[in-house]
Amino acid sequence: MNLRSSPLLFMEGRDQETPPLPLPIPSPPTNPSFLFAQPHLPSPNSSLIFPNISHSQPLVLQDNLHDLLGLLSAPPPTPSGIPNIAHDNTNDQIMMPSLETAPLTISDNAVARSPEEVAIKDKIRRAASSSSKNRKNTVPKVVFQTRSPDDILDDGYRWRKYGQKSVKNSKYPRSYYRCSHHTCNVKKQVQRLSKDTSIVVTTYEGIHNHPCEKLMETLSPLLEQIQFLTRPVLM
DNA sequence: CGACTTTGACCCGCGC
DNA sequence: GCGCGGGTCAAAGTCG
Image (cartoon, rainbow, N blue to C red; front, side, top):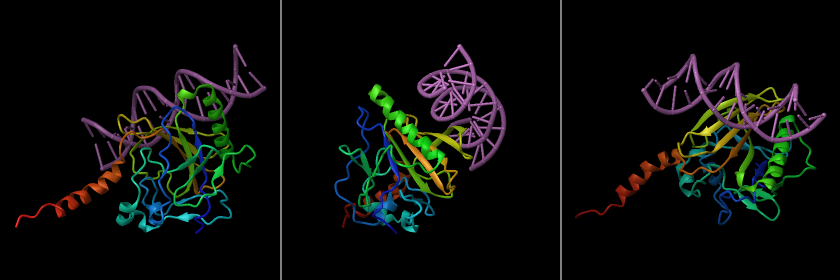
């Protein structure tokens, strides 16, 4: 397992007047279960993808994803439901917690590996271009890839699908989701790479303005138990 | 019955 | 101006 590689992550809409991504985390977590405890992470059979996919060993999530101790030792969930990502404003880089950083820089010189990646890079470029023209109308975006047999990754939030489109040069459609929470306007796009069908590209747009329901569901009984155990005992 | 998915239609920005 | 491609809408269908 190569924890020193950085996952393939892109960030859009940086340096805007919109709320920034939740950052930074105070100190690098040392507990290896941190990664597994993120409420957004997919099923135990999934893995994060590192930039050099062909050479890096994917980080396969393990059964301790749902390890309650890991959950409790993890930092609080991010408002966006996406990983706690440290963002280096000076170098336009984002970093994944728990991974020592060799952060991936968005570069025009980067060699795209597939039509989807070309499209993603193009999209980022256009978003960056338009955001410089109209800085108030952009929202933070994070694109990341996950190796998973499932298209729908359980990130702890509830999503409603509102569209699906076939994408040029891709045999897999792109699905569009909105957060089901009535006051929340976060969207995500999910698309499987045609070049490597085991990879799912997920794009989050916006920041959740409500807690992660699944995490709260998980924690509520525990908190009740803690309250019960710590109640004053009458002798 | 409410929440969600499916899917064709529509809208809009962009390149030519 | 036109066509293309991506994103969204909304009605109908499905599911628990």
